[in-house]
Picture 1 (cartoon, rainbow, N blue to C red):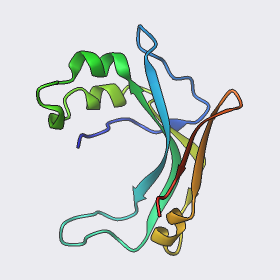
Picture 2: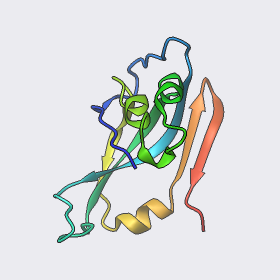
Picture 3: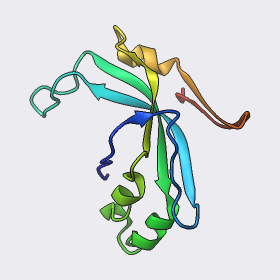
Length: 123
């Protein structure tokens, strides 16, 4: 695990690729905690959900990853936390039952009209 330290940006904001343009992306459902989550409180009953893109600068990742210690997370924080690397949609949902809600979602990612990713909850 590693932290992603990036401020949310509008989904239409331009995203800069590294010097070699090795930029990966994937659609994700972002979870927004409405209250603090601690070991004492556990996961709250209500969470906010937002559609987002997760960007990765593969050039940074390849240059900074520790190949002998992949579980260290080295390289991932920098590669995923560049300015603009947390594009979010305009819809913020607080479902009555977030666990049932997200299990029925299908997330599609299109680039120039071409389907690049389809994510569904495995059964």
